[in-house]
Length: 242
Length: 234
View 1 (cartoon, each protein chain N blue to C red):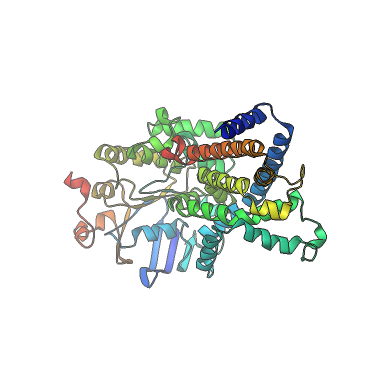
View 2 (tube, rainbow over the protein chains, first blue to last red):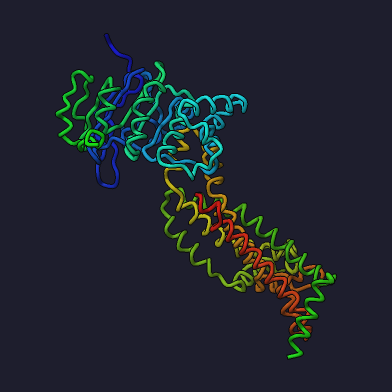
């Protein structure tokens, strides 16, 4: 059965200075699936994610959302608001945790009562309800990441992008992430995840794409993915060593 | 020694008794300085953001000019604006010379480079993730701008206060464009210069104490905004 492609990239080239950091002929994100992008440092994973989530619109080539070409010259605000991103090293704005989680809804002019309700709900699911009044700049690494996950999920995005969310976290926070993440994502959500964590990949992945030197080496389903390829450009997964 | 102690006591007496002439001079000074700082800030804040956040061919050149203008002598601004607003100048018909508006015009030109350069540095040093996160949260251009201003607010306020301090203490522009007219364009610094020449040392000293106190207050506020608790939390 043909699977739905929610985002498609065609003939993408991204050049930084005089270096081509991405060169992708074709790539598709499958709808309602966990799409993993893996590769070594400098393989272009984050650059690809930035293009997919419309944070970076400075590239050559074409991007399609549900078959429709995205105009890079426009803000694409409506489309961007269907997406959310969890960054590796999240930026939290001045203010308390509540403010940070509520911010995406405020940007969408959502009614304050609904914001209050949604923030409390998502904070409870991530077990950070006791941090809501705390200044965001006093949080630990794990608490910061939980706050950023809550901020990304509060809009119930159609596509959730995750950029190595657990790389900078301690083992306890990684365990929390791995055991809760699948439950936090709804069936209607599409996930694009950049990760080094073999445990995460084995647990969640539907499709795995391996990048090397800005080019796609292979895109396979989890069952067909040869994990020996980890040696072809991916560092030993830290988690398994721990 | 009596000369000094008498002058200090007389100066303090003028301040404590709220001498009407002192009050009028201080009020004029504050009105002019606040107006020029306000106008300069409205121009400088967006200008600094444009310079800090955009790539354009003349950016390096503009930054060099901006840094050069930081040390602009007040009398140079005074001469330049004088040539514009004097009777034979291209803006002579507006009758701005020897008016508070004339001083404000000159002071605005004086502090635009200062406020712009300081805010440019604040914006430039802000974490790039701020913008990336704003885009990924679905912020429009206007919302991104508001978030940026909000995140940089302590630095921006610090820059505006520095500009205010500069105009409050300058004499070149006020003297050349204001003419030191009593009750109209006589500011703290021009009055101090005049009264000292007239031999009213205590009066000039009273104004000096007020100016110093205002400078202290400005620096205190700037310190708390940039180095205080909120800044450390950032």
